[in-house]
Image (tube, rainbow, N blue to C red; front, side, top):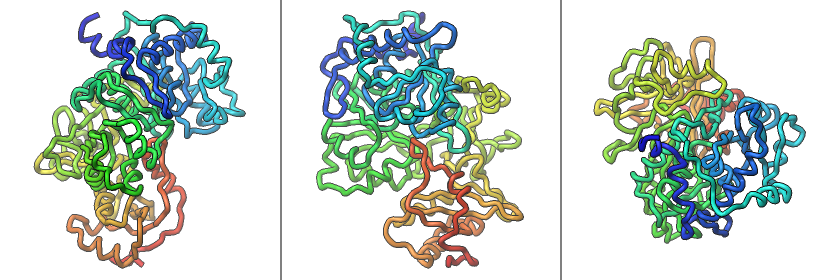
Length: 507
């Protein structure tokens, strides 16, 4: 095995921690060193291996919240070679059973707080509760002096199946290899100078790529400690940063917005947090969070598939993703032709798949992603005259208003400038000819129809066709487990609007 291949594996990053006893995992006030944690993971791996048959792929379904048991199963997979299928704890019934079947799981692990999710489901495979005495006794029989070490691991070896968020359709299982995690984790650990003195906070769900790539793997690559939380809590975040001395945390979606809604303390800016890294936070929330907690907030762009990654530079405008750099391009969704500044098109990787290794058991979806050797993100974007990329929504978010194609992202960003609007989702509602624009708002404080009318009238970059036809105010937006808005739920609800536009006035 070459040095380059070894550097692209999680095994090469994890095994040096097997002798570390001054760093490790914090969970609900308890600490376990990396040495003890990986020793336990080795015993877990041996117990798991005893459950698997050679007749099928060694796929292990994990339906757990963020617990040491989940971390042990992941570390065991790195050390032993079985494959984790991360099962979404917000999935239910037939949908959850379909995920288990699609991932070819030979066994599914649950815990006391997730076991009810599989009650009454015929999964066709054993279901094991990691909190049960029986499982813990089984693991105990394999406890040895050290964790196993796979010398033959390769960067292209499959490590985990991670389901997409399902914001636009049924989730697909993304094939994530050792290289998928190790390359990104090492890059981020080096970029943010994560080391032995750092504590990495994990509250985003570990069945998703954000927690694994931007959290767990970063800690492993940097040799840092990890503070686990079962699930995200805005108030819990602030308390845990102080409790564990958290220096780095990751996020996806709206967590910054939720944390900012908690009561501020005079000493928030003196806390230990120095880096908050993630994606999809608004420019306003990034700025306010950095000011409140005295840290750097870095918002990147990527996806579970890993086909395109965009990194912000210090001079990137607040609303932009980062500079346009080959092989990333913005192209016409129909022809694939490159587009000029200001033109909205699809964001693609012209050189091929990047870190995308395909969808498991879904060649048609894989082929659709990689049409003509180009990786298609399904995301809309545009580039300004200075060469910076701006997110404009999903390909399915195209609006056709009075014969003109519009994207939802720019409209959402303009609405978020209003101080009373905390969150927003814009989508098209089909009418006899084209679409009408509906905006669903989560508001903090008071907002009247006339105030919104006056505000939008002052936004010089809001075109006359971009004005929402209908405004709906709600208490909360429907979300995935990773805090992404599910617009199809709002669209399908067809609830009456709060205000309707008459000309350019809301009533």
